Length: 79
Image 1 (cartoon, helix red, strand yellow):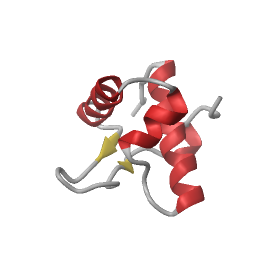
Image 2 (cartoon, one colour):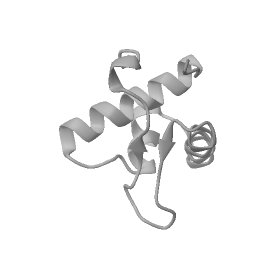
Image 3 (cartoon, helix red, strand yellow):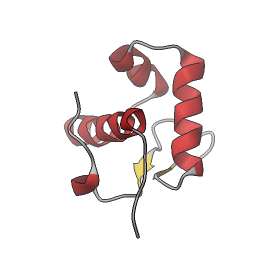
């Protein structure tokens, strides 16, 4: 199965992987906002899109529950 994601989606996925490795938990939406210097709605829409595309899973209503559903080796380097 070939996994497709945009360059920006790849950066979000790489951020999730790096953050989770460094901190032992998934990033909060505020962490994405700080790193990518973007707005809360932009981050939220990206998270929803990644979930719709089957790239991540999360538990609704539970903070920091994002999990990657793809092999970290398939991710781009975080810029």
